Image (tube, rainbow, N blue to C red; front, side, top):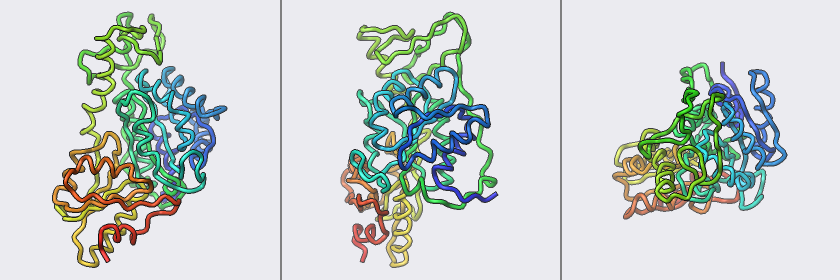
Length: 372
């Protein structure tokens, strides 16, 4: 059946299809319709939806729900993400599988609540202290909002970590035709839970890249869950070797798997001398600009980054192997262009940007590339 839905509605449907049974959030434009959709939908499938008194409480509810056996989702925008940041660190430290939807809007601070932007790209990567890697996915359509929500839940469980799904105002609130009946059934997401064994250690690993199953519900053990540095049993520690090992574990468990979920979609000829690189809603402008450039006889490819963090460096290099010029298209000051300059040293990396709440027109992309 064909539906006419926007990105936020697709996220709600993707969460339900992924077995999400808990949601907590606080109203914030342009993410509020996810809260409304989950409040309307979850009780009918045995789930729980809570409107928290603020953003800090909302993500805290989600962390507690996950550790009590639920599969949780929350949604916010840039100002709310600021308030999430401390509990994002708690979820990283406690190795809590959680999906966080960030529907970006124009900023900084409260900015223009009803205008779109892509200003949270670096914020999502560095939103908590310590600098530990995060996973962030960036859909470009309502259908991908549905599919990537499921993928975010998969990765959250696989890596025992919070995963970000990065939308923007235009993608979240623009309706599109989506036929989910043509989408293959989504595979069930299985949570690895340890048996109720007195010898179970909730944060044990033999190799830093190993991910320990979640603690069992019930049983003889008391689970220790803390925001402070702890050992493999959950006890606070100041032992330097233990701290070093735990910190390396939080990094390695994600980076060791990064290539397996890295995704960059390429449209156009391999080895093109000109590449338009983008993500999210701005990727549509890049694709439109590429079509116009080809009509004018310019050989160009489009690289659409679907996994923003960790940066899919190998796939970006492959997509831009023959490029002399790479035009990064994004609605911010150049948040991701900085990463592309780092990954592609020696190439002519240019930035087609706009921050006034309007979408980037193909004409700006062509002008930045030097195409009349």
